Structure formats: C-alpha cells, structure tokens
Image (cartoon, rainbow, N blue to C red; front, side, top):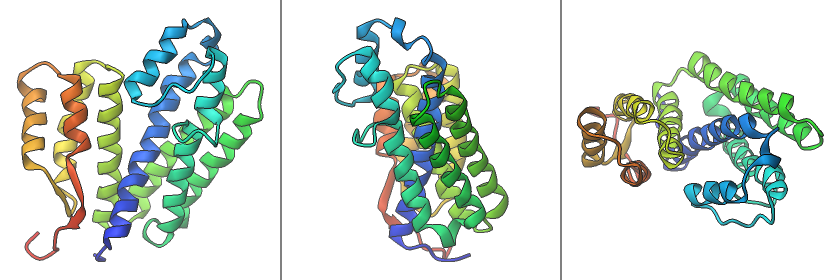
Length: 231
C-alpha cells in the first residue's frame, strides 16, 4: 500500500466531493429542467440560500442556464465538474487512466449539453459517467486507502447536500451510517465527537439539518494523515 502525500490525500477527498456534487445537483436539476420556466422566482432564490451560494442570477431563465453551464460562475455545476476533472488529472497515477477517462467523458458530455437547446440527454450522460467513474474506481484501484478517501469525500458531500436540500431524515440517516463505516477505513484524521454526534442523530433523534451540515463540514482534518504503523 503506497504512502499518500498530504496533497494527494486532499485531491482524492475533493475528487470525491466534487464528483458527488455534480452527480447530486444534476439529478435534482435535471428533474426540473423542462419545467424551470414555471418555477416561482423565490424557488431558485431559496435554492441559492440552501446551498449557501450568492444569488447572482437575474431571472429564472438566467438561473436555469448559468447555474448549470456557466464556466465563469464558481458555483455552477460545470465549474464543479471541472474541479473534479483537474483533481483527477493530477491523480492519474493513483486512480489510473481507465478511471480518469470517465471523468473526461463527463466533461465531454457537459460541453455538448451547453450547446444544446434540449440538453437533458447529455446531462443524463454526465450523471451516468460519474456513476461509471465510481464503479471503475471500485473495480480498478488496488490501494484501499485511495478508494476509501474518494468514497469518504463522496459520502460527506452527499450528506451535506441532502441536509441542505432537506431530503428525508431516513435517507440522511442511511448515509450517516454508511459514512461512519467509511471514515474509519481511511488514514485521514477525523473528529470522533463529530461521528458520535452524527450517529446519535441517526439512531436516536430526528435530524437537525443545520447541525448535520456543520458536523460533516468539520469532520475531516486534511492537514494530517495517520501513519500506517499500528493502523
């Protein structure tokens, strides 16, 4: 098992987070794309508030295009996909070319969607390629820690987004249980008290959405990697 640098541990973690951010936000976005024009103005304003991003959009139509495709908007789905791609390129040796190619294909399909008047087909292909990327990572990356850090980033981002979007408590509880198993399988330093608190909510109480966001955002310390000795 290779020893990962702090820089590459960070890249793997954010590759997991950015790929999940693209996957989940696209799934929510694609369901509403055709009916976006019928949305009330305050619906996209509320979405921006939930995601803690500035509402820079001038109309529902402007939001529906720029949030998905604008490369100059740092909060757009497109920008997050490019960040995932940039991390994947830097990690070519760790994740392998076969895994990397699915992120490249997701970028290709997103660029096609940007030019289309009916982009839903290409957007679905972006979602499919992100899912294929995770599947290939599971199948072809031999280093358990490399796989584990990607999956940890993915799980943390999913819980964060689900809590912000007020997804059902049962779904968030399921993801918290999966996170608890995942975080212990990497060499990243994490907050034990954070895991305990999340598990308490998952097993004993209703979900306090703001607390879930706060706990998962501060769960992992990316400034330190545990030694393999005694791990």
